Image (cartoon, rainbow, N blue to C red; front, top):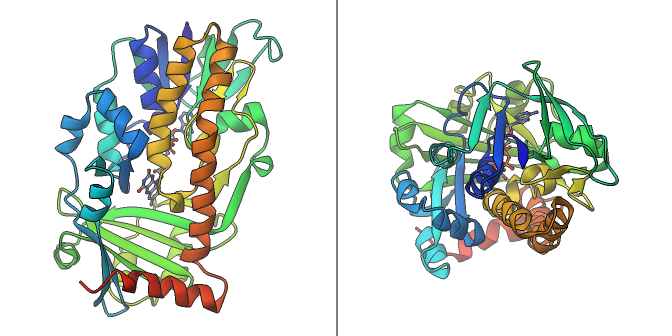
Length: 369
Ligand SMILES: Cc1cc2nc3c(=O)[nH]c(=O)nc-3n(C[C@H](O)[C@H](O)[C@H](O)COP(=O)(O)OP(=O)(O)OC[C@H]3O[C@@H](n4cnc5c(N)ncnc54)[C@H](O)[C@@H]3O)c2cc1C
């Protein structure tokens, strides 16, 4: 079987790894010419962690694990209001929790790809022609931005929240993407003084309608994320982040001075599709079912979804049965994560006074530092 997997994030890399291991001929295409860099901090536990274990990747990932001890909630002067221990969370999961940068996860998955997988960077999917949408007829023809046309038995859209494959095959985003009224940004920058003041924890400042968090990266830089109100993707994300987050206090204004032109900026949004496959095309990861950055399980679901898709296809009598089994098996977990994401959106940027009071009071119940 020939498959084209579009997108070399956690979902695409995991799908490609497992399909390659099962002997499929896999072409993995990635829009970016180069690996994406450190990205943001990820917690991976539960089913996603178990898949990485099955893949034998835990020793490599352990070397890049970030030694974050706690989430520390601070006030506008940087004084600690409360800490929530990672150790406690890890204990609840029998220690099966990884805290790593997204770039380190993607690097480990890329390095482990089997020989059956060809990774082609700088190649974006720009067109899909499926002659047998209703009956899995002829192979698909997929056009890439480098001008090549690939004929494949299956196309996997693993190209994230703003998936091109989903738009081309399932229809425009307005039908499936539900924005939760907020935007998020993440960037990494060098500032020795700020890095030193962060210590070993993830520090978070949360105000009524915006949140900023910072931690140190392995090479001594600072990884930052912000979430702020906003219904529409701005034309100039850097200016928007600076405008929305200015005056938060603590180190935020200084950090905003480092905000790079290539800031990763996304709507806080969910993807809600009744089905993840049409003809010979199937979606996985955020492309299929983003729960939003606030749900906190996107990478775990991307890894677990890639595994479930490959296993379902491998075990089924034909492609269609495999895609149906994949969807039926994964949908309940996805619905749970999406409910969490919707609830979290209300707490990060609450709309009522009572929500603000409760949101700010709950971390304090965890106790002082
Ligand atoms: C600040 C922040 C914090 C987060 N924290 C957590 C956390 O603690 N735990 C957790 O589990 N999740 C977390 N997430 C969510 C997690 O990062 C995502 O859910 C996960 O990365 C989704 O993986 P994916 O492979 O589906 O998509 P992506 O990571 O978006 O990867 C998609 C890939 O496809 C490529 N691509 C896009 N279009 C095309 C195209 N047309 N052709 C070819 N390639 C294309 C992109 O370049 C990219 O490499 C967080 C997200 C953010 C922003």
